[in-house]
Length: 478
Image 1 (tube, rainbow, N blue to C red):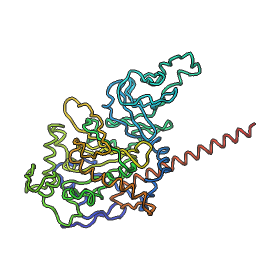
Image 2 (cartoon, helix red, strand yellow; image 1 turned 30 degrees about the horizontal axis):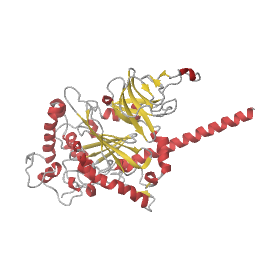
Image 3 (cartoon, rainbow, N blue to C red; image 1 turned 60 degrees about the horizontal axis):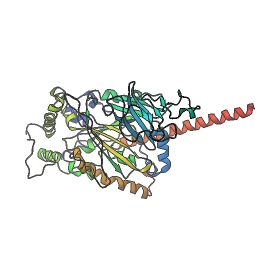
Image 4 (tube, helix red, strand yellow; image 1 turned 90 degrees about the vertical axis):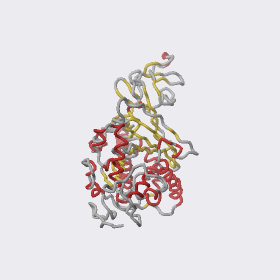
């Protein structure tokens, strides 16, 4: 295979041999959107990441206090609560929220009764009031106290202040986010930053939830998530896709609260010893045996990438409309455009459909929940969103037929995850070692986690010092 010289990055470190992603875009048969022409690497150092971040209960508690109880996080889609009274239960570690459509918009209530603390809602649904099943205390959909059975016995309850506590709510591209921090002053738009503009070309609000598969993973949430933050693992974990996936030629871009990895399709991995033919690339991509006829004929005058891109357009035209589809580049038809919004939300660009979410499995820092959602374009009336398909302990991702070929790929990732957790519990090496470029999105995640935890600790110390000072002043005044 002919190999081009490595291309230097913005900080002087070499990138992989072979075509850079931007060079691949130069050969596109269609106009490439400006968002894909952005090239925004960021060097965050090369120090090891402390392995205790995956294994330590103390680090888990720091994440709970300073991240999960403070950060904007994806809860549900707007079309999952389309009517007034519809609600969706969102849970993160020990906290539970009722995300509800009201006459005044979407609100998110802490899912606990103010009388004795019983969970107010156990399942997603619709209601005309929020009534506790234990003693019958009830609130309106706007969170105001509505009814106290035997109210004569509660003269000490002030109706005006006995309202349901709320989390902040924001909506972007059809996604509902909540922020549990009552002191938060940063809007969702400010938190998201430039990703809002970057996704305008793909209009994720104009999609419906076609599939939603969830599974408990026996590994820390970061282990599960990091398998989808880099393509460096493809050669060892997914070797069958190397003939058509430019794994180490991925472009990694880092901003503040979001980052992305773009992995090109229809171009071979530079790690292969021989260059595959166009037919071999196509068979690998379509998972077609050598004794079967290719469903997509190859044109000797065109590249496999452009032929496959046109086949993808043909697939999407009846679903999304020719005007939208034909304006898209080969890159948008072929490439994995995987964004991550800190800390755990992965919307993909173009018609990839994929959205990932990774979160702790309740309060267990050694297990997590992995969710794969498909957001599909449509024409005409918007189809209703699907329910969540929870895989059982004994099931794997191939037991979710709605995932198609992705199920096989996910199972290869699943094979590693629990073993990574076990290895990190066993290792005598105090940290994990990351590549400077290919794994820079993993490093970015830990960089941001460290910033949030350290900032939260500093604020706690400052508050404690202020409280101690006030107490001392009060004692001195007596």
